[in-house]
Length: 347
Image (cartoon, rainbow, N blue to C red; front, top):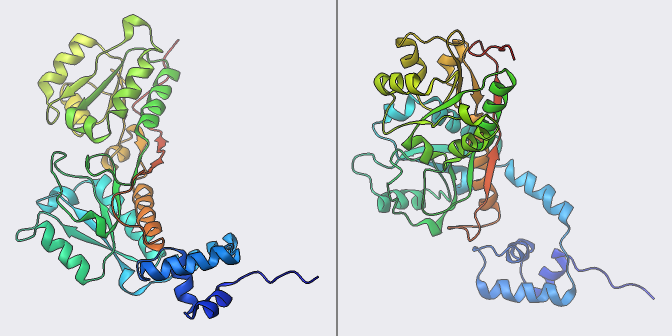
């Protein structure tokens, strides 16, 4: 007895009186096919016992991702920083943008920077521009003001954000693995023989990393003797020499793990040199300090940006829009950069 032929997209298209493309889109719940047609074709597929070929689907997905698709060519990078130079001078954020732009080009898209706070611009106008240009995907960059409430018609776009500064809505997120970065810093200092390890940060930076640096620091303090555990120095704003001097004098750390700009320079102004007087590690090592031989973590900002772009691209090709019910977070672990600001101490 001859086994019945397995149904195919072509056979179901002929039976339903539609094109093969319509059948394919209907089975993927594409908004370009009416709900009634989707339901009719999906019932037909169920009745005929149709099963998609996962390998073929994957191959065609790769082909689509490498090829520009009309109005989907542009993905927006929503930038809330203003004036522009405040963003353009930050290596981490511009690195994230470069990484996203490079990955966009590899996948057949083009990433374009849109300034949310540009004079004359408002959310309704920006959304109108996106719709007029057929832009369906948005990466929300790290916010300048974490208290800013972004009023936007999120349901119309494929979405992702970088970092934790966007508190609402909850979107798919690509970010550095901050907890692991702190673990790497603590591991290196302890293995070099440092025993009184302090942490310098700011309230804003801790909020930006979802308190994960602070959590990692608190966790690893338990590895140290009770008398060597140090309360972190948390600035309300930018780093200042006077509070740093007082904290160094009171807490007497033999090494510092730092999260914010200006601390290394302020330490030098106070006559403290690393590693002569104390060790120094930076959790987000900028290029100028890396050139100066400072030890620390390279957060791989370009890779973080690339992952954010991929989160948006995957939603575009599955016709997914709006705030997800269960947002995912993509963590990128940084790398340790050797330098001259820590030394091996006698045990």
